[in-house]
Length: 297
Image (cartoon, rainbow, N blue to C red; front, top):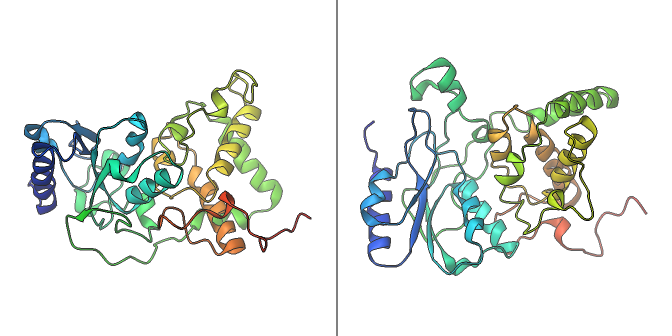
């Protein structure tokens, strides 16, 4: 695969930052086993920087790995797309990360491709449909960075703005109940969605607690439902809509439909435009104001 200009800039800057001691680690992407895979890579030596790539399949959000050493002292160089930078903002706002510990190398994202379509059809990258998250992305440019590696791109009109939410809202209550009941029956409770989510950054998750026990160990519809709904409400107003939860789900649950529904409700109730857009814009459920909607009173 020919090396593009962004890839070359990534490698050059990673070498410079590591060799100069400005950072002790760089997190980006490398090519995987197959041409449609570009998983995260962790670089500590300048000579390892040639593993870095930027292509149509750099979907993984590398910001989540900052939590692996949230109390450490090392400075990390992190390559970020628009959604990745929003994740970093959320981590800083949640006080899980000190801004000075991360050097952000922004990459404006022209929209990535669907690796599952690549796997099943074998078509060339240029002919593949966009990844689901990219179909409704409004913020392709990093909102927080120390330097940009390419020119910013113009936001694209969403191909299908919250289409899943609109389809569900068109259903009756009973039909919606059956829809989610059948989906949550398939949940394995592997916690992949929680583990990959930048908004799920609590140091101790209530689902892991033994005393008190909030979630039974049995994988059954009732406990699955409780887990899915509580997690969705926990990230309401904090979800950056990166779609990582849905991407890693081994049984293909439509998790973003829940997240997008809550985002839509928060926009209608509070005028909230999205999480992680700036360091000062706190989510509406994170603080109280006297004029908040109070329909339950």
